[in-house]
Amino acid sequence: MRADYVNLVNTHTVPVRFMYHSPETLGEALRLMREYGGEARVMAGGTDLIVDMKLRRKEPKHIVSLNKIRGIEYIVEEDGGVRIGANTKLRSIEKNSIVRERFEALYEAVRSIASVQVRNMGTLVGNICNASPAADSAPPLLVYDAVVKARSIDGERKIKIRDFFKGPGKTCLKDDEIVTEVFIPYPPGDSASTFFKISRVSMDLAKVNIAILVKLSSNVVEDFRIALGAVAPTPLRIPKAEEYLRHKPLNEENLNIVEKIVSEEIKPITDVRSTEWYRREVSKILVRDALNSTIKKLVRT
Amino acid sequence: MKIELIVNGVRRVIDVEPNELLINVIREKLGLTGTKYGCGIGECGACTVIVDSKPVLSCLTLAVEVAGREITTIEGVAKNGRLDPVQEAFVEEGAVQCGYCTPGFIIMAKALLEENKNPSRQEIIEYIKGNLCRCTGYINIVKAIQKASEKITLKERKTT
Image (cartoon, rainbow over all chains, first blue to last red; front, top):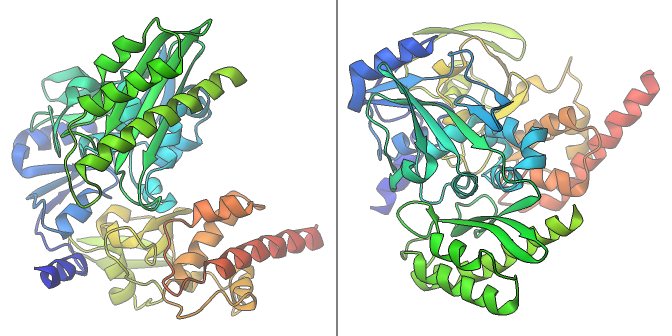
């Protein structure tokens, strides 16, 4: 088994035969998706898809590349938030000043993804469409209540990020839909957000990742949002912890209870990266560290 | 499928299959074997090349995806038979041991210094985190990149 696996990884071509389509307009791409539906895969950066094809985890008959479609690579402020296009590279997102200043958790998450090379290739939309439970961009998008815009030939629909993920590698997208954009509303004024992850080395996928958003008003928590990844089949918000902490002072006692709620609410498994026990334990530490770091940001401003 | 690439400043027209990777084209069809095939899954950085001024992984790039683009490999770094300051610094600092990871590191160092002429030690370390050296010569690699940055600054001062 092992030798076989190594061989497949090191194949010099992608061991899958497929038809390559590189439409120049979104309309053409949508027509192709309608025609080939379940047998097609959309490719943006390819950093997940090509690896999956090398390992034969995915064997699409058609690849619809977004590469040549103009007009879907942007980061623009609009309607109380920021819109990020499907072709926008992770590296452009981390270099964007609006993201850096207003969406701290997203900035920190994107910067923590793999390497400069991978971020020059991969996209935010690709990161969520791949639907890894450990996707680093997912917890921040969850705490910001981002909206995913998906299109098919029939039109556009808006999906709350909370409803987007359906399981490991699964989203609520239909076979003929393409995500064209993610809209991220501005977080409330005077709030701050933080992303943290635990991984073996910084290149690795997360054992556990977390994003939180806090707004205080005279030492009482006015808004608290928390999301974790790699602790369940999909990235999760933890509403029970959020409700508990709202309108309460941020003290040691409350912090202990929030940690406990989080470690009970998550549904981690044991896999190659961590055990279930470890994930529950380390989640508590991450909650504490992320809260501390967010409070520091609030004090600074 | 015929595609056109500009590789190290030279226009090349190549026939490729959809499932062919950029690294196959570079190494096998163009005979530029300086770019190395390492892990094949985007974790080691040995296959890094520059596409339109950005470093990317040639082992995860379909050749058809970069049709019409400008590609720089390690063979395009030295100019007119003279080593680039980054290459000189790698030699002087003993940043090359077995050499397999070196092309990837040099491409990354070039890309970093294009973006940021005077990177701090921390910025260098962050930028090359996707490149693995299994001889573990990281200290000298970081030193070499610092030295290259100094060399480039000095050179610019002389010419202005």
